[in-house]
Length: 195
Image (cartoon, rainbow, N blue to C red):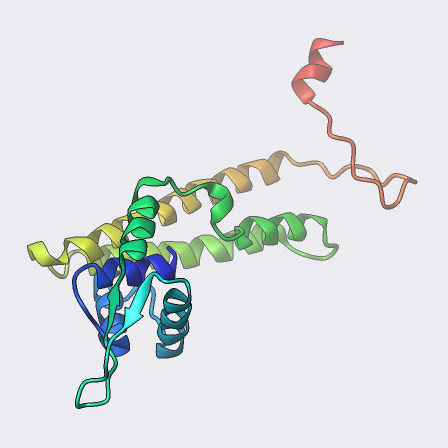
C-alpha cells in the first residue's frame, strides 16, 4: 500500500494533522504497518507540493491540520479503481534467497526451507490468535488486513512444501566449461517426447 494514498484516504474522512494521521493509519491497518512520524510529514509535504492536500493554519496547540483537495480526491478515486499489479509490489526476498541458496556452494537449502517454514508457521499462529481477539464491527478493517496476511502465510507454507518436494527430485547439473553463460533450460517433458 502506498503511504501517499493511505494518507489521502484518511484525509477524505476530514481534516487531520500528522500525529492524528499516523494514529488513524495504524488503527486502520491493525498496527500491521507502523509509520514513523517522519514518513507522515515527508509524505504530507510531497502531497502538498503536488496539490493533492493543503495545509491549514496552525491550531493553538501548534498542530497544523491538512485537508484533501479536489485533485487529491481525483487521485484517490483513481487509485481505488486501479488494480495493483504484481510489478508494483516489492521483490519477493524469500524466493530470491532460495534461488541464491541453490547456487551458493556450502548452503544447506533444505535447512533454509525448514527454518523459513517454522518462522512462517509461528507467524500464522500469531495472526490467527490476533484475529480472534475482537469481533467488534469497527475492527473489520484490521481483521481484513490480518486475513490477507494469514492467506499470504498459508500460501508461503504451500510454496515452501513445493520447494522441498522439488529439492528431493533436484539433481544439480554438471558444471560446464562456459562460465558466465546462463544455464540452458531443458524442458524434461519435451525431451521425453523426442526420445
